Structures are given as C-alpha cells and as structure tokens.
Length: 108
Image (cartoon, rainbow, N blue to C red; front, side, top):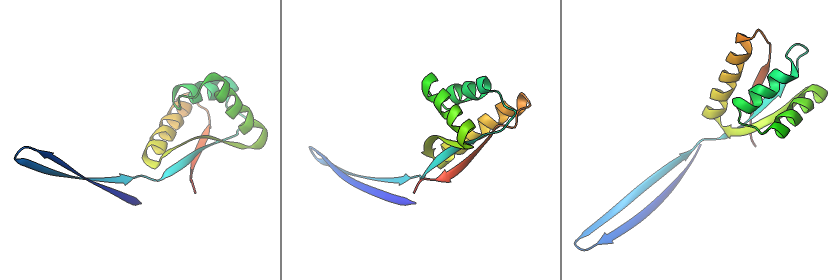
C-alpha cells in the first residue's frame, strides 16, 4: 500500500494552520467474469448493467467475450469496492439459481 502525504499551510491574520493530509490509496483489482453453460445472457447483461454500472453495449460485449473466451474483464476498482460488487453479483445470481462466477485479480 502506498501513502501520499500533502502538507498545506494556510495563513490568515494572526493564525497559521498546517494541514497534514495522508492518503492511503487502496490497490486496484480487476473483476473477472467467468463463462458457464447455465446462466442466460440476459441475466448476465442485467447484472453487468445494474451492479457494475456498465452501459448496454459494453455489458453485451463483456458477456460475449466471456462466452467465447471463457472469461473477460468487467472493470477495475479498489479492492474493497471490487469485493463488494462481486459479492452483490454472486448474491443476485444465487437468488436466481445461477452459477455465475466472478473473481478478482490484482492490477499490476
């Protein structure tokens, strides 16, 4: 994990304030969708649009790419956000009885 520090001095009459802002930047991870022979295209596209906020054309492209190659990159997000999105997608798929699967890979 990297830490960036910024120091900023604000001077006003009779007052000097020093702000120390430390930013911990979380590593970025790729969300990968994996093909299966059960989950319908329409459901996959719906999940990509509603949970991952992809546009229709991109969602369809990612779905087709996963179908034809076995997997596809959905998006890249900070790890905690990527995990949250994957958990939501898995939950939605399990509610419908589908084995739709996503994994995470570090962005290098």
